[in-house]
Amino acid sequence: MEEIIQTLRNFRNERDWEQFHNPKDLAIAISIESGELLELFLWKKAEEANSEKVKDELSDIFAFAFLLAEYYKFDVKAIILEKIKKNGEKYPVEKAKGTAKSMTNYEAVF
Image 1 (cartoon, helix red, strand yellow):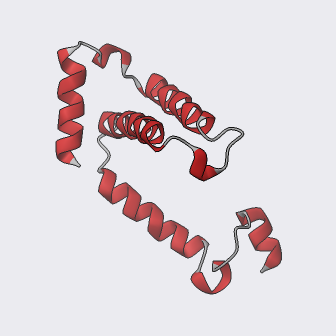
Image 2 (tube, one colour):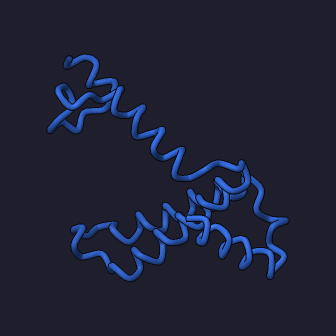
Image 3 (cartoon, rainbow, N blue to C red):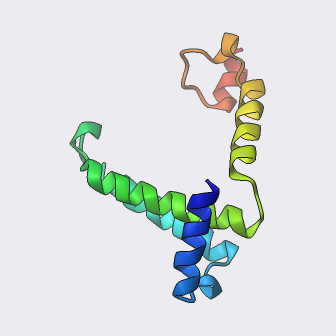
């Protein structure tokens, strides 16, 4: 991951784009790229989406997310593992397995 972040940093800095990469604008960019990803699936079955375009949009989302994490000096691996642990506590296997209910509905069911 450090190689990816360093490569992104170099790409950005060579173009003097760091001035535009503040947390607000990076978060907005993630949202916009997520919308572009969603658009690839609009009115289609999932398997009909162009996988090359999905790859490109997903890459854009990851890039902006890594840059946002870099801004805050977050260790990407550590924060993902921490979130998985929290979700494991929030959705224990014995209660959550096989259900796609939201946490609000999940609490009511169990």
